[in-house]
Amino acid sequence: MKCAEVPQRFNFYNVEINIMVLSDPIPNVHVISIYRSKTYVKLSSFIDALNNHLHSSKLTDCSIPVVLLGDFNVNLMEQTTEKRALNKCLIKERGYTQLINQYTTDYHTLIDHIYTNIHLVKSAGTLESYYSDHKPIYVSFTAL
View 1 (cartoon, one colour):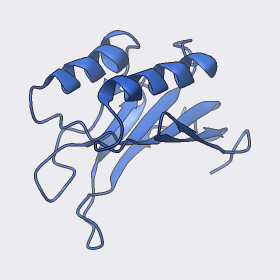
View 2 (spheres, helix red, strand yellow; view 1 turned 180 degrees about the vertical axis):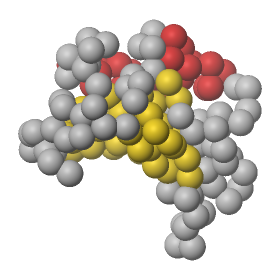
View 3 (cartoon, helix red, strand yellow; view 1 turned 90 degrees about the vertical axis):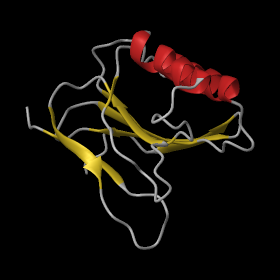
View 4 (cartoon, one colour; view 1 turned 45 degrees about the horizontal axis):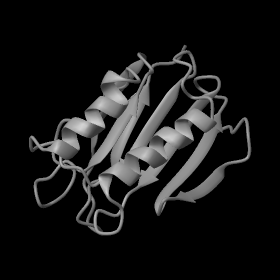
């Protein structure tokens, strides 16, 4: 992967955030990986951290390609207030699409997510892992 900027790492409200800005295959794509501990980080603090980062990084501009992925610890297989709050923040307010629609853990939960505003998605899904109870998630894009 060709980085357009030096990758950055933050811990904001105890949410781990890593950012890479890639120049290829999609120019200026911001890949943001997230880890939220369900035990230590309330969803309201998590959403505050996301909003703060996206706003401070000027990623409120819909023309900037963004991939937001990681362990959100919100089970999208259940209808909960956490799921509704996350959908409001990322889907309704930002226009992102959530790409993963299958279990991401051995416990039949979907807590690892990929959100994007890029419409060149070739495929997305999960893989198997023998070293973790989480399944690796991936997204593949069509070249420009």
